[in-house]
Image (cartoon, rainbow, N blue to C red; front, side):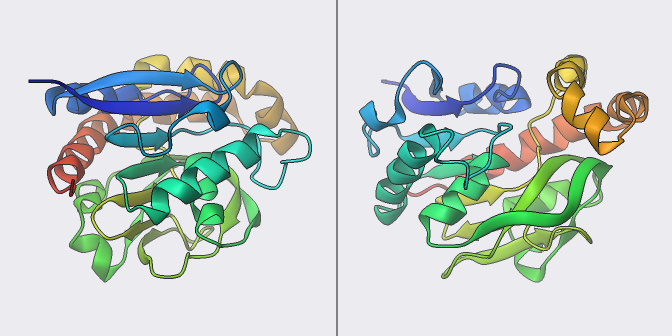
Length: 234
């Protein structure tokens, strides 16, 4: 049997699929990373992979003049989402999905960096994201977005109303990071050291919380993804 394919658009090396790799392989997916700094997303077939995952990164959706890759990714996502093909966005990926669906992306009221649990909506309690109920997840963003038309809000936090959204079974946008792996968390701290310093956020506290909450998130995040994959429509 030919493996199903997943393409993961990656912006920085350490923001990868993390704990999501194992459930993807268990579900029969062959994983291909596309590093967008080296391979133009405009060269990709938007309908090609069985699943497209757009990962996080330190740029903004509205930074397209400085980083043209943003425009290429948004165009790719627009074509894929119009076709209803299975698509998952994480942090920047969710913001790009929202923009491709016609919503505004903009700076939030404050940076949300740290570990805290989600507040699930009623729709969220019926969705695979319910596996994360009560589990502190990793937040690392400054931007937010309006809920796209035709989508359901699944989760919120006090700082960010739109933490997760779905459109049918095949489209899922997650503003937070359920894929983070505690054993690799130092990469996040080193890679975002400048942002942490300018934001006045203590990396020591983040490191302590990663050790405290990381294993629980890895387990719950993998369970969430496995359930979501089981419900995808061809």
